[in-house]
Length: 299
Image 1 (cartoon, rainbow, N blue to C red):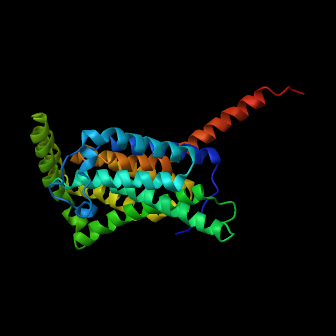
Image 2: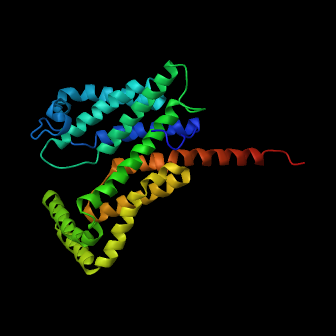
Image 3: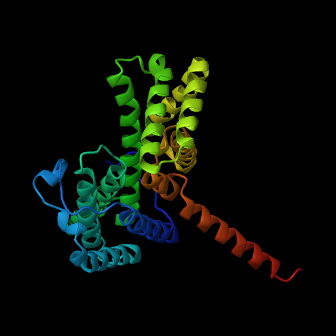
């Protein structure tokens, strides 16, 4: 999984990335609805009953374990064990939420990222055990970020390829048919919220799509190209920033058109591709260097 060669990142960049990921997991974990039964088990829920996560009696224990694992992960202590705990809780909560008869897939990428990081730390541990290292100046945290970037890129590439595969190569030709999904999604939102404005909003967007099929194809085609270009994000920080920013715009457009939010994906893009932690480190160092220069005596 090491291609291109992993970067040796700034320690503060890695610390902030761990802190941000831990916060993302905790916040989004409690954004998921809790259920007390699995009416339609899917995935791993077919073998494990996660309904205990929705029981009031388990709430304090789940919270304690989640916060403890997140704290150890953010602090860089016992990271493999902390990641294992976070993965178990996250996958369990996601499986429980998806076992209610509905179809959702907004938690999978974050789960795969944590699994990839767990694999990276296991790889680094095995390399140390054999008396070597993962690479020159490359540690477990660096490798975990590298694996994370590869998982994110693979997920977006797969999303693009699946559109082409499932439409038998006619995805762009069929793009204006998204008007049907727009109207249906807004109708579902009306049923959930009883907000009458949702019907009118959905009809207006659907009408605009049908009235401008060419523009719709250009708009959706651009999003498809962004997904197919996902491997470019592995070529360096600038490429990752450009793709990450583009995917954030794409998610904002999907949320506007389809009322579908991927907060977990957006958080991952901000942390690892747009890489806000790295930008903060650069800004802090620039400010410190400027202050140090201003205090130097003139000759």
